[in-house]
Length: 183
Image (cartoon, rainbow, N blue to C red; front, side, top):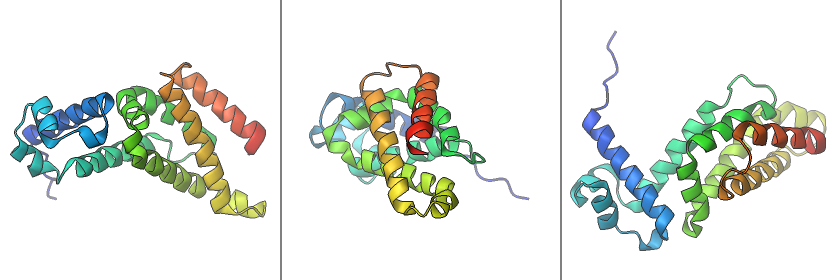
């Protein structure tokens, strides 16, 4: 059987440098004021190299969001039956990637991130509580959006306030709130 090709380490290092530079710039100024030259200079690459990997800064933003949401969802327990079980890995992922989430949530021009986070959480919630909502004769989409909005709003507060509670405690308390008042 043929082994999958490994990614070139130089490419991975270049993309990592570009991503880190971009996120640092997003935390410093509005997305509209960030140029490709700014990103390339900060990453210590030339513009051409940046364009080999990304079409523009919006493509870079989109890839950063996609990568983090994919990793965040993968960090959640796939076999968990109750959506509450997913909270600890999610908060731990937020904590481990604080710089990214803080930059995305604190920059007004990156509202696309919040929307994609909300969609991802709602889709995951829908998959986990589908049968339960149907049995209770509640619209599945409504329940999923409600739970996702509550979670994203709480996670946003926690991140923007620089994690005032440890990730494990925040996850536990949010889980208790969901169990007590929602589920």
